[in-house]
Amino acid sequence: MAEPLEPTGLAPDGPAPDGPAPDGTAPQWRRVSDRYLAIDFVGTAVLLVILLAATVPLHLLEQPLAWPAGIAVVAVCGVIAALTPRRVRAIGYLLREDDLVFRRGLLLRRFTAVPYGRMQLVDINRGPLARLAGLSELRLVTAAAATQVVIPGLPEADAEQLRDHLVAVAESRRAGL
Image (cartoon, rainbow, N blue to C red; front, side, top):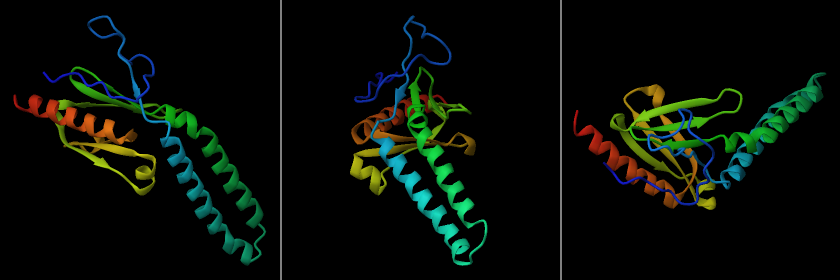
């Protein structure tokens, strides 16, 4: 069995959904970096600009719904921006004995368990904003399309360490297949 991974710089965040581990200790969720919050805010700002640009033709044609549409766009983006910190804090993962559990969402909380032996690809992506912030996203791909998991906002060193750990564990688990 592979050595347990202890990523650095990731804040623990409460117990696992299935209770304490067999040794009696409460497993800890790992959260994404707080720097990911700035990247998510930039995404919200870009959405606001695109949606406001879509209302420009209404203003040019002097449509009566132009101002209400613009106000609605700003209100929706304001609500999205207000919920962004909680939404980012809700993203986390947990390394368990046989699988990796990923969670995200506020109102509709989603948990996805990816068995180590089913992982086919562990990929690291770094977009331009993420590179500026020193962050990466880790993508786990299995044969089932519904279990593709993307963990955003990991520090680069932690993403590489987690990728190496997952690849090693996945190879050892697939050996028995």
